Length: 418
Image (cartoon, rainbow, N blue to C red; front, side, top):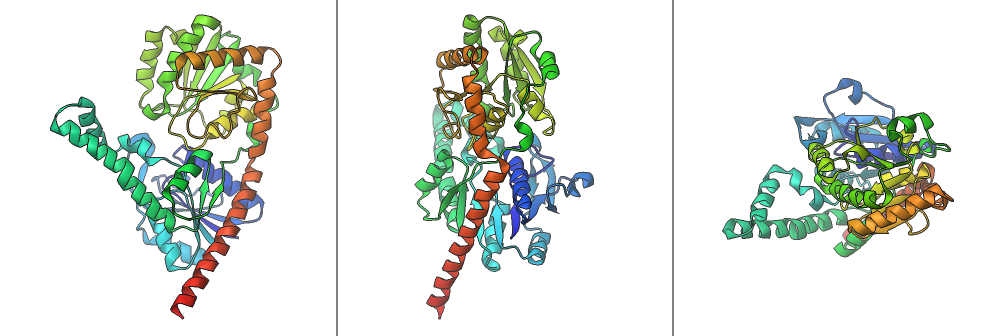
């Protein structure tokens, strides 16, 4: 099968979508499929010519980069159509509904190629990165007055009406939707598009299934502490790291000083979070590790004991499963993508967004981790269900289903025009 993946972002940008594409294409190639990735250029020839993940076709992008290293893809680039015609894929798999996603459904319709879409992102949680919307938010936060009320109405309209209408219209042009979690499955169901869904999480690479802790790295990170906690995330507003830091203050009151929290990642909120650790009296217990190369990140998982997670904007818990593959139990706020993988009392705990409850569940998990390791074993058992190969097999089944669905639609259309 020849598969054309369409994406608005890919390496060198680091994020959930590029990781998902990289791993899915890897698993599909192992099964003998040809995978072509249509991704924007980042202006670096050494990266743009990278064929590590199969044939990567770099189409044009606008030079200006947004917050976090995003580029604005030029989805009208004629190269996209030219290369798609040359490849003649059996299916198009778009990972975004906008920009390149619109081009995907347009070309799919023009050349009678079935299109599938993965619902990776809840876009309403990321509107604050757009400068116009940021100004609207600021007006709304000021509260009273005509401007404040207008901003509030625009906020509601943009989130509930415009985005919903666009997503419904877009999905109706697809033949199948891959939903990474129960949350996204429910969101798509609420759109009432009638388009079939298949649950498909991002697979976990073999290297994350570490058998033993990296003792040397652990010694370096722990600073002599007996308990090592960690989070892997972008340091930004929607990731809710402030909540974890407040919870650690409560945890410290009960557990004591014998722990280190490793915060892996970087982002616009870093300096604010560093100040916050001093204000909360936990600065000596928190280490900001910064960005770690993806090829090395599994070593950091294997050096830690418990994974903490509080983001409310995720559609799936990729980092949760990566942590579990390293036999790390998880304590997480019950939000998008968490309920699929975190099972209370088996591989960790889900909690409401309450710092005392979160700290209590962390204390229980830490106590278990020092005794019989039951939660660690449960974490590994959960991760074993989400290997790259297993997820690629599910994707293949979804593609075949979409192709049959598309052929059925074409048959009906021909009968109506006959």
